[in-house]
Length: 332
Image (cartoon, rainbow, N blue to C red; front, side):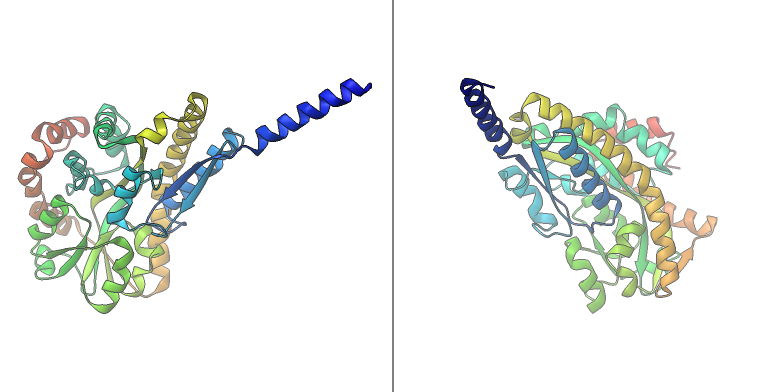
């Protein structure tokens, strides 16, 4: 090899090194639950896929357990560009002005995952995500957590059992109305503060899917868990719209593919994780698990279903009716 060839090779190698040395695109992905929950595992899976498929051009930094921001802070942080990606629970969009998302908080509106996915994976879900554009947010996908159960330091098996209890809720007018329909006093509180509030008696009980209940160690400070499955808790994966639109087109396509596969993974594990964590609660021996009879569940449902009608003006009657039609729901 002559001197000129060696020189050209060295120059090419130097430029190649510069290309590889270019800073990767950083996506800070913040969330408020533990890493070993369905959402936590899905976030880590998305990170893995995103980094592999972009061949290192993108680096995803996942911050679980409110390490960066609490519930009320994270949405503003996203809009300001302090973080690029979140997966907030659907109740978080009401305070942002997207009240339609509170339809997912309506008690007993979904009986199972099949009914739910007709909405989240169909045209209704797509139209809801599109409504976030005006907020400077791009909605990418819906991720399941699971169906919620009630917990307290007394058995909760009938509407009368809730009377006067201070029950922690997310900031949602629907959830507020839900608790009031049972005679309870709703208390809005950041998720990261719930364990201590239960431990010290600031609140008497709460509602959670089993995965959140177990991974946040609420079974250590709650004597009873009622398998009510009265409501759904899910998430919308969102990004800062300006950040997303400024990504190179090929990178955006690769990330969309990674998100699609991460969503399937998230939704596939949601039920199995919640089933496993209910068994973990049982094995702990610290919380008694209560199973409702058909009549007990019917009585709870009867007390809570009027919330649907109460929320029509806030959420939109047409949207509620569209979901009824999609799932075959009968409010009677």
